[in-house]
Image (tube, rainbow, N blue to C red; front, side, top):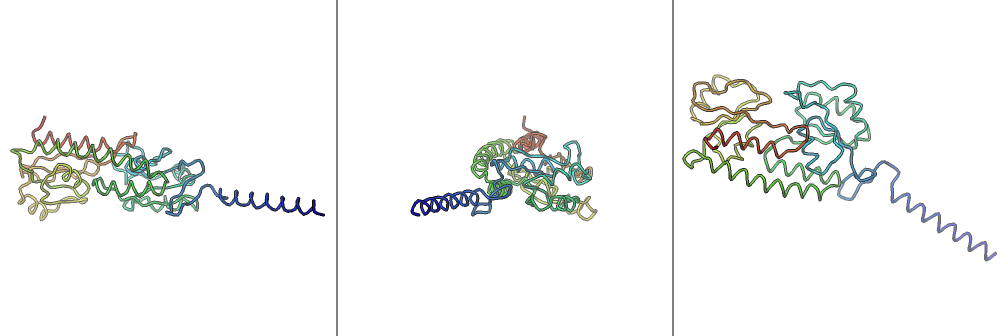
Length: 269
């Protein structure tokens, strides 16, 4: 009888241990930490993004498995109509990143299903907003350490580029600029004096008169949604600013290219 009690006690202990192990591992595809981060099995989230812009944010935050829906060859991403294969890929994701202004956002959300976590991204290359989004995504992905390392390298590169561009100010004076609403970040990078913004719609006659009266030396147009010459006959030099990263999903070249264009426009080498 005593031997039976010992065996029963051992069996109960083993059952309790197995139950604790299963509970600790979870029965789904991933686990959720106290801070809300979702870590898929294997620790590497599958991330589907609408464009290379969201993709670059995801990569900066530490994601390694990133699938982009809209091909980089599509000059104006909001014009793209997702294919059935695109929507099928969304259903296999752990996270789906999109921007609210994208007209296909509703289709993306519908295709995501119950497994994928939908994440709305604030697409703006303003340095402070970028860092905030990368930190947010790093927390969600469980890759906060990678996000922090990227942010440190970004801060160093941004400071270097900003200093270089400001060294090209004509006569050592901050230039007056007019920016399209999605390129205002580049004026900030240059330390330029922002005297007005326009868009995303075409400039109206009233806006034309108002902005020309500010006598800007530069117009920072959006290469992805240009409406042509913004301030004709104003004497302002117009340059195209690119917002979307390349297929490598590296955000830093966007800032390097903008800095090079700004420096060239201000007469630097």
